Length: 134
Image 1 (cartoon, helix red, strand yellow):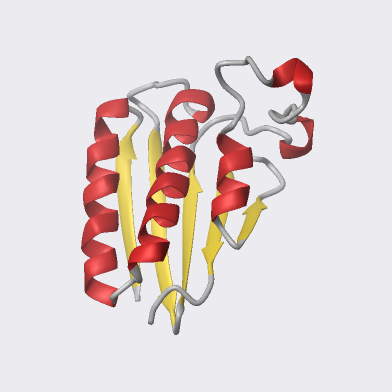
Image 2: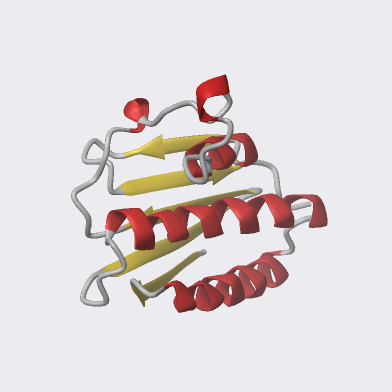
């Protein structure tokens, strides 16, 4: 099953993403334990795409693709920004970064998803959730 959603880079559109996740999880029967992980990780990825990738430029879009295969779910989030190098993002668990307001998104996504992949440009992330459908 494949489902796509394209939104303008407006933080208010996070509601559309939340509704899509609710609909999808009900449709394919995702376990309650997995629901929270998926919701938080995907919302964080989309928020990063809007704010950091597209700089909240309403002319730029964010594409979210949900792909369910067997018991797994892959969620791809792509923005139209310049990209970034994930390896250069400071570790939010280091003492010097603990009090920083931002910088926890990638860390959070990597803890919630079973796998996380970025494309070479750094404007696409794929969150992989395994064995989430009972």
